Length: 210
Image (cartoon, rainbow, N blue to C red; front, top):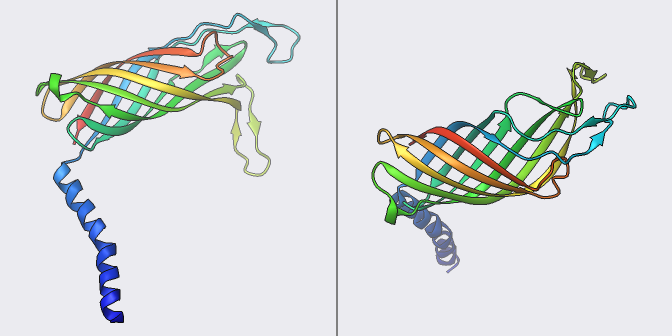
């Protein structure tokens, strides 16, 4: 009797795993990866600040510049999937005498409506949440860790939560290679370093569907 009960328990434990494996195999999951270039924008908050402690105030800047975007996703069905994305300013910008670099990252649900898709053109909608790391640097000054000996001009970061929505259109040049213009909207909580919580972003990406 104990052997029978043990066998039933093992069977009940293994069955869900087998069913999940069969389901995923039949789902024909597709993976995508892409890299893009673009820009994001936010206005200045109009403040004069003395971040360097020199007694001289300088105006805060607007957010802009050239951004790079890396991302990828898994399509669990032909129209629904999940993904993640990172977007960051390539070069440091000037912020009241300091260098700055914003990094946006988000985790999204993906919807590709098959009813209006073709073999070569596929619309894409992303929606999710994540964060922003606004990193500051001390110009040419170097700060060295006395224990590790590593030197850097990184001063610290200001971190914020964000909500993200993206609208893109994939144009497949081949069965696997696509280009995708995309508009992204970031709503950043308490983004007081700049003039608005709303940050639009525009990009053009090249990707590959596995």
